[in-house]
Amino acid sequence: MESERKFLVILSGKAGQGKILNSDLSNQISQSFEKAGLSSNYDILITQHEGHINEAAKLFAGEYGDKGVVYIAGGDGSLNEVAQAIHGSGCALGVIPAGTANDFAKTIFGKKKISVKDIVEAMPHPEFKLLDLMRLSFPPGVCLYSQYADEEVLTEVYPEPNGEDGKVTAYALNVTSFGLDTLILRRAYELMKSNPKIGGNAYYVSVVNNLGSRKVFPARYELELSNGESVSGQKDYVTLALCNGGFYGNGFNPAPMADPYDGILNLCDAVWMGRMRFLPLILRYLKGKHLNSRYISITDVLSGSFVSANDEEILGNYDGLIFRAPSFSFEVIPRTLPFARLKI
Image (cartoon, rainbow, N blue to C red):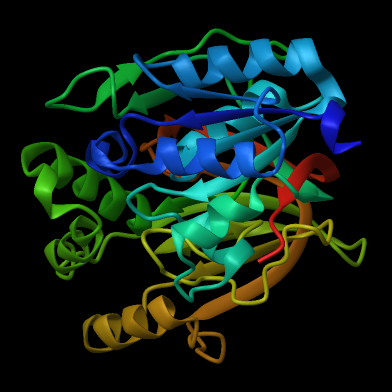
C-alpha cells in the first residue's frame, strides 16, 4: 500500500554545477507529497559532502528495505552512488534528471524534455520494474578519479578490495567504456572545473579538443555472447562502450537499441576510421546513426573481460567515474534493482 511506502528524496548539491540549490525543487516536491496525502511518508535531503549520497541511501535502505524508494535528483554519477548503496536491500531507485548530462534518464524518459512539474507530480505514485545492473571487477590497485574531493583537479583514489575474490567490485547502471571517449570525458571534467559555467557544453568542446587524436587502445578480450557463444581475441579499439542504457557523454547514443530491462548488454566498439571520416562518424555516433558503419561493431553480450595489450593501463569509466587499471571484467546481473517508474 502507498500509505506504507517511505520515500527519501536526495538532492545532490553538486548536480548541474549546484543549480539545484538555487531552485524551488524542494518546495515543489513537498507540495506534491502533501497533495497525495503522504506528508509523513517522505524526507528530503540536500547533500553536504562527498559520500553523503551513499551514506544516506544505505541507511534508508537498511531501515525500510522493500518498502523504501530513494529518488535522486542528479546525474548518472549520483544515480550510480544510490544504486551501489541500495542494491540487494529491496529498496527501489528513482530518478529526477537534475545533473549536467542526465544520460540514463534519456533511456528512461526519452530525449524529449519532460517538465519538472510533471515529474514531481508523478513521484508519490510510481510503478516498479526490475532493472539490470552491470557488475565490474578490477584488480587490487585500480585507480579511481574523484570529481568532487577537490574543486580544482581530479583526485586519485585507490579503493580497498571488497570482493570475496580479493578484487575491487563495483556496479554500473548505465554505460562502462574505455578509450577515446574517456579521454574526452576527462577533458570535459577539467573544463568544468576551470569554468563551471560551461556546463554540459564541456563534452562538445572536449570532442573538438580531441579531433586530432589518432590514439588507439589495444586490448585482449574474452566475451560470452547472448547466444551462448564464447569469443576471444585482440583488437585495436578507438573506443568501446558496454551499454545497459543507450546514452552517455551528454547525449551520445552508442546503443540506440539498449533496454535496461532485457538482461543483456550492448557492446559498441569502434576502430580507427581515418582522419577524414572521424568527425562525420562522431556526429552520427551522437545521433545513434552509426550502426551501419564498417568501423563500428555492435555485439550483444552477457559477460567478459578486457586486458591491456600494451604497456599502458586501460583508461575507462563507469557511469562517468573514471578508472585506470591493467584489466577489468564485467557481467550483467539481470533484473536485480527495483526501479520506480513514473507514470508520465
